[in-house]
Length: 229
Image (cartoon, rainbow, N blue to C red; front, side, top):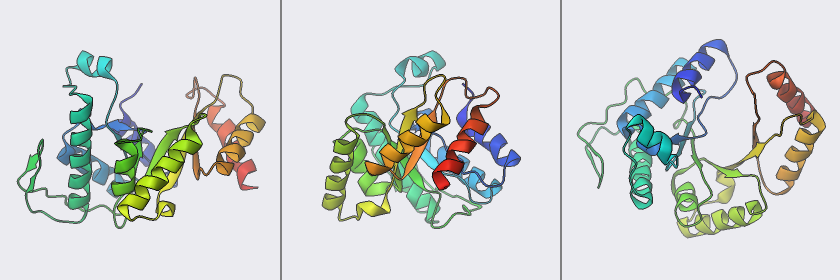
C-alpha cells in the first residue's frame, strides 16, 4: 500500500471537506517530534482537517523488512504513551524540554501551530483492554475498534477506564472498522451502520478489497446518503 502521510497530503490537495488521518500509524515508525510536525503540517495545509491516528504497532515482518527497530510489546506501549504526551505538549505550544524513558526533546518547537483547536483529534486504534483502552481514556479524542462479537465488551471496558480516569466516556468518539466483503451491496453496508450504531458506535469506517477501483467510492457515497436520510 501507499505510504500513509504522503497519500494524505495528496488527498488534502485534491479535496476540501474530507477529514484526513491514518488508521493507524505505528508509533515506532517515526520519532514523535517528526510525527507531530507531520500531522501539524497536514493540518495547516488542509485548513484544519487532520487527525492523528496512532497505535502501538504490530507488523513485525514489515518493520524488520524495512530495517525499522521493533521493540517488545511493553516497550512499544511505553513509547506510545510518551508520544501522546509529546504531541499534547507540542500542540499546547510548550517548548520546555521533554524527558521520558525513551524520548528526550530539548526544545519541542512546533511552529506554525496546528489550525485545529485545541489540537488535531487523536485517535488510538486497538482493543487491548489493559493498555490500549487505558490510553484512550487518558489521552484520546477517539478510539477505533474492530467490528466483532467482542465489541460491546470492549466499549464496557473503555467506560471502566474512563471512570478510573475521571473522564466522561461521551467525550470520546467511538469508531469501528467494518470489512466489506467483495460484492457487498449498499443495503448490506447501511445495515452494518445501523447495527453498529445500536451497539454504541458513533463513526463507522469501511475497509474493502480493491478500494481503488472504479465504483468503490461512489458506492460508499450512496451509503452515506442513505444513512443521512
